Image 1 (cartoon, one colour):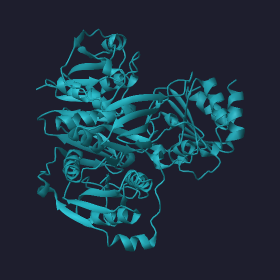
Image 2: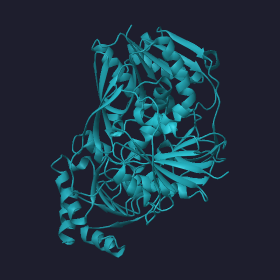
Image 3: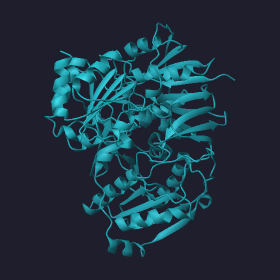
Image 4: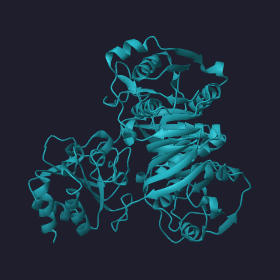
Length: 314
Length: 249
């Protein structure tokens, strides 16, 4: 029996998150898989149109409901379960959206979930990191019943191309809970590229010394068209907001170029950058563990080095 | 009585360097320091603070696992939990089974709040809280960095990819903790002595009517691929040159 995969799209109401395109790439690793993308929204039109262009997607399903304006797992999960019938696999991205939602779906289904899928070997065999990426585990499902999964986005390229899947508007008749209510989301507005998808990322650690110190990085990042990240230590110290945190409990990213500035390289940080193509480390302590994983290391004072790099690249 | 139930998992201590067994059957845990999962410590700390503010009367800690887990339950009692429930089971406990067991404890104890860590640092599954909330048909607020209780509702600030999201949930609810929710207290020696006298109840998993089925087979453990050793440059100019040569600037 070939796999019939439902991918739950992540979006902000207007734009499809790139994490969805990465889920599609993951699903396409199963040859012959039938791939559907589900868009739950108050008004799904724009997002569904973007999802329909993803190559390899055979159809886009929309569930429109005013209750879907904000992605509340308790509200979305019963709707997903209501149309899960024909599907063998239900996938979402391993982002805070997907991790929150898919495990609730798995709970309602009584189905097993494979978290953080980094490779699909077959319809029943998957690889995933455990112990903060210090071991890779191959797991196998029975092939009976449904399987839920979250896709480790740093392990897959975003599917791109010009698909033209049909869009099907569905509705489900399930009671939706009102016990969980969205209040607000505070996100800093930034003109810089999105940290999770940027080709270049510059991250700062506690050595930046202050929120003021991070301005050095913002300035260089703007010259390079880079996103700015931060270590847990820098976020804990209040130098940068939580959405900038890179690492096991922050964002797991895979840019072409990652520059770690004043970051010692705790294991939980390295977990978040392992898939970066090139890692540059700048740190005054030559013994810092970050140099163990860096492709290019520079020992020295970041407060001199960063402005100099900026001057050199003009 | 207003109770808070906190889930505790025994895991390899976060400072231990993880090594995969040569035969690929697991990671080496013999002779390795075991601890309370750090996110669960945060969960317990939050529960204790809520109790200390007078918004709850009793904090219960619970775990599902083999006999060894009692050490971590005693640690939790020493931190300040009032009593402990040990659901005994051997082998792999998948999130669904842990959640089914916790649901049985919920039915018995009727807590106003259940607080769990957002993930365990061994299997990194990050599922149990959400699965439990689904089985219980109650709200979930994952990745909490701030929690305020007022009457029958809780306002929870969550660390999400976009920034900070605030939800309001009706109680009872399941909360899972993120790192910045609080800093757990240290256990003091007299508290360790006192904890020995606190109640710790043992309940076999099957006595709760939960079958320990395993749905995912663990086929093989491998060490992760290593990155190749890089080069050192001496100054900013050499760094810029090296990046230009790689076509990265």
